Image (cartoon, rainbow, N blue to C red; front, top):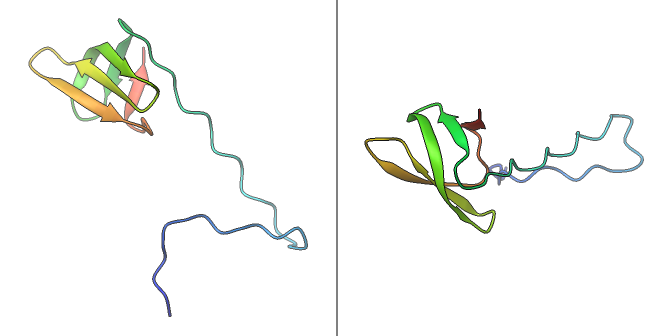
Length: 75
């Protein structure tokens, strides 16, 4: 048996089950947005890299966070 590759399975049109819901669009951040992160806390976006990553200043450190922004929320 093959291990799971992590890719979602293809939905067949003849399947009796509902198709999976579409993925929500990625959150868009801009410079000076106030954000919170589950690990680092409160911060301010200081840089945006073409919807691939954002650089956030958390006071004591700056972190580059890549998409998907699962733990980063706009305030």
